[in-house]
Length: 499
Image (cartoon, rainbow, N blue to C red; front, side, top):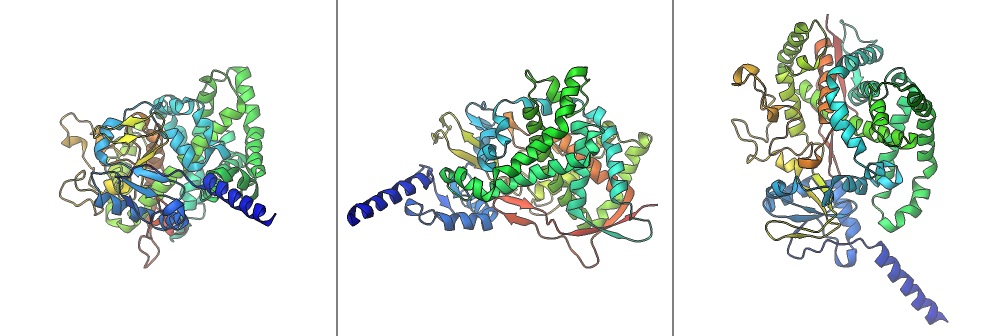
């Protein structure tokens, strides 16, 4: 009997190890960088922990050691194949049926536990961002500026022209972008409904919490652990609240034939079948994406401005000049003239890449590269975005890419033969070393909207306030966690109203 129990235990343990052991990438000739997972993944936990703490440096080490070759890294949740930039040209335009960014996003953020997997049903959300949101941006700008003015007046009512007032940079920027995006996404009066604003933030926070909590565990255990570590009831309550707030508005718009002039309207009018739950989920996912990326980039840029105050007068003069030409109004045409601000923003994003890895794709159909390297179905591929952004191969000129040069992308309209800007020098432009927006067929469809929001927030601050770090404070170091590169969320800056 005891032998039977012992053998049964061994059998059960073996089955558990097989089920919970992650699939290793089968590339025997490709080097691995960072701590190895070891035989039967016995040291995988240590390898995952090392990537969480030093992922940025591990990727950078691999890039410089194997610059034109592929290498493998053990991330917090999986092994990834990091491909060199030379393969971008042959991969960037492959159809979604071969390489899929959405599937990779769902895999990374455990979307099936938070509703983010709604984006796998169709490309509806992406098409609306690329077409309706972008095409209507000129009409949105006045409302965006009006909402930002309202939100800033409310949030900065204690600021005056005599004394500098400390503000929490991240919290302030987040609340401004939330206000502006809410106006564009659902329109007045819903955009100022505090319950709705709280629901957006609650959803974003819960998505991040679920992913960060469950990601370290084997895939097969996540459904069981979800109920213990990240109870479904919390996400269910958030989605129920969102439906309670927006459900009646969706039904009313369907009945009255409401003319679409916000993102909610675009999602409704372009849906073959209007399912309120699906519409709301798409809206929450798009809101989360806009909030996260735009806030990070804007905060990085504000820190870089405070670190280099000598550039502020020129930027302020440029902004005031553009506004004067448009009778003090923010317009898309005037925003296009802010070439110096565009360059500063773009350089800040280059220097502070949002992620060490980008061009995330999962191989859905086996594919063989030009060198003969075969990519089996299920392979998770990425490229070393942060390392590329500081590679002198792609950023030539008088200043090294390892230094911060606010004028790197500046080109005044007078310097161009056609009198128009070079699209690659725009904040939303994608030059060869830039993977911040992705690349190719699945490039970020909302980048023009994001660029407008960030420029509007930064431009309004520069136009209306003096800004600096507190006495004796320098730019805080970036926070490196996993593959992410984030600004310090605790740093304050000082604002004083301009007379």
